[in-house]
Image (tube, rainbow, N blue to C red; front, side, top):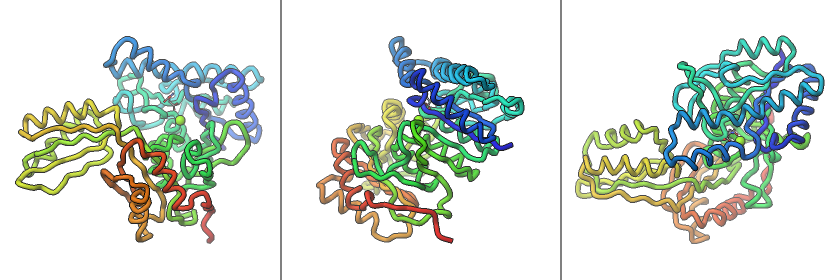
Length: 411
Ligand code: ASP
Ligand code: MG
């Protein structure tokens, strides 16, 4: 079957006129003969509103009930979109995560998709229905409703594209595609025609909001290209694909992430098993750690610093306080007025001196670097949160990203 998976984000289905225009767009793609599977997010700010309703009741909502609550947002938009398509004389059916066979683990609010049982979607496609799937939700083996983490509808779409062996996965959004940096911050930011999976995973993880990082990891694993496109025009957007098919460039993007905090435990005894004990305690609480730095021991004592998303900072500090007591360590220090700035590019590992250039640019702005981390395709500096916009602007300018042109590799 010739299947196209499309996904429409919350702003693209934010009101009834927009839902109607999405219906037109879907039917236009269908008229080329494709079988259409469409994933949608909740309308506009629905999910935020639902979160606020729960917050008005409790500061510590149970994660199970949050998933029960948040999953309702997508059920509104799938039903409305299905009605809009039916109104246009075509066949459509909306399906929840459970009905579409999206099976996840039982980790509420950040569940991972384990498998997709495609039978029911395929049988609806065979009956010529447009199949509209609720994004962001799944069901555990115990028939519990789960959600995939904020922004998770992208992941629903790429998992479906993989499971259905779709021709492509198109993510429709309210921007032109993926940019070299946030165009609201740097007006010269350039839209990229192509980006590699690896770069996109890093950009998404480093704070670029355009795609959910898991969605890119899944597409990368199975080699399905993702097209990120505007839902308001026919512009081609950005294609996320294999690095081997793309021209190599040193840097493709700069990004900032203010949603981080540092928690440090100081004066821990320097002996085998201590780190294992601390990180088992953090891991058992489901705390995701972005970065770990252990400094050189002095006088038999060590410091360990962690960077976590701000949502985890209280929990991480509580766990470390327990560890401090049991290990008789000195103190816990929290710092949340920090941000990460990252440069990302497939040529970073193979080009000497990129890190030095980044540090020099920050030094020229008199921006102090607190922590540094890097991967094959990314270098990240933790800096004072207030300096983030300046840092991004300076890096974008010095690496001349406004001139970046990256095409397909020549054979
Ligand atoms: N509605 C969910 C959210 O706002 C999922 C998504 O939009 O992808 O995070
Ligand atoms: Mg999104």
